Structures are given as structure tokens and as C-alpha cells.
Image (cartoon, rainbow, N blue to C red; front, side):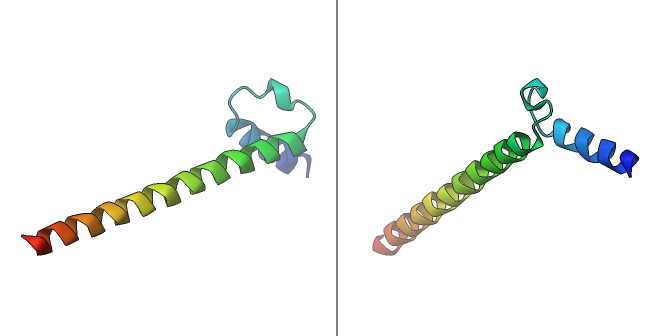
Length: 65
């Protein structure tokens, strides 16, 4: 069981930039990782929306030609 705990701890530490700010605080570590992932999801959704709007604009311009 202890070996599994150490593996989880190392895996979480590998997802963080520095690591020392999370010493003995796995909740903060998990919260920051979730926050970072949420930001990535929001950015991806924004980029997809912009891409779709550009495609729509291009298709409209082509139809007018």
C-alpha cells in the first residue's frame, strides 16, 4: 500500500511545475491541476468556436463570388 501511495505522489508531483509549494498539501496540488486542465478546456472550446465562425465566414464569402 505504501508503494502505491509513493507512486501516486510522484505522479502528482510530475504534473506540477515546482512541487515545493504542494509539500504535504495534496488538496492544493489537485486543485491547481484541475484549474490548469479547466483553463485548457475553456481555451480549446474558444478556439473551436472561432474556427467554426471563420469557416462560416469563408463559406459565405465563397457563395457570394
